[in-house]
Length: 477
Image (tube, rainbow, N blue to C red):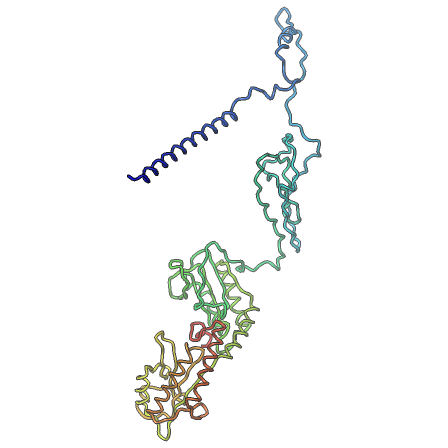
């Protein structure tokens, strides 16, 4: 064992002995204080006064003054002073004010809240005893509240005792009760603020976004199946020409999810949003009014607390969003046209499939990225859909490659890929690459278009709209 170990053991022993000694000293000190406080008093407060007590030397005189007759009955007794019961001496101040009962004021103008006056301002009463009738043990110690109608009028604590040197703790004055609002200004059922007993996680913007949706928050007491919620206002919501999204908080996973009408999943906290704009334009006032009314009725039906934003600001946001989307909603097409002879359908299909394109149900070849997002499409220039049967014979005069700028990520690079593929098609099919005016497109003419694509997508990014993102796919649908 080293000297360090020995030193630590010695120090620990001294510390333990010191703690025990300190505890013993504290115990002895508190025992003495308790004995002094609980020691029986030798004085009797009922016999302390000179007028109330019978002195010891007067006891003999008291016995002599008692005279009895022959039968032993008392015929004379001392005339003692009438005994006075001890009383508390009240101050000569006026009688305490009568308790002021709280009253309500139903005026339109709410009154200012009561201002508390703390102990430094409240007058202290002398330590002299107060009449028992004036004592109010329920009153707040050393705290006075100035009455302010129509708030509850709080009476000042009467006979508050001054305790020194330790001041009584002060409790914060209760806020004044605000005047009742007129019935016309009372919130409609279901429009109260949602309770915040449990903090809900943030709503992902790929589900609903305040930048593109009018979102209503609903919270019920009980868990209710998704289908019961969604079927309640089905007929009203079908009259709205914009997308309506139902999102519920899965209490098990703690995550927001899109609600399925056929799912048995139950929800208590919901977010329902209607899209403010799409390629057909902004939502109308009538449509937003229908949605607003439907959400109020939904809240009333399920006794839910709802938070409904104002419709006026939502309409302004919708019109402004629609104007911005119209400015960046660009689709760029590159055409490959035949020179003299028709393009064989079988060769078109072979070239498209070799480039990773797939013929889909709408009759167009589609090139997608690894996430399934459409990069560009290949269609018949005459808008006639491609079919597997029709492509067995030569029947095509021209092809169109189409790039939807707001719906494609990294649009400038995708545009370059599409341009290269169009030139390969033209070389293989013996065609020509032209624009919509059938003017030849050279590499020098394609470069300004590529820069324009990057410029539009940069403007979208500044507004928080990612080209090809989930929000952009909804807005430009």
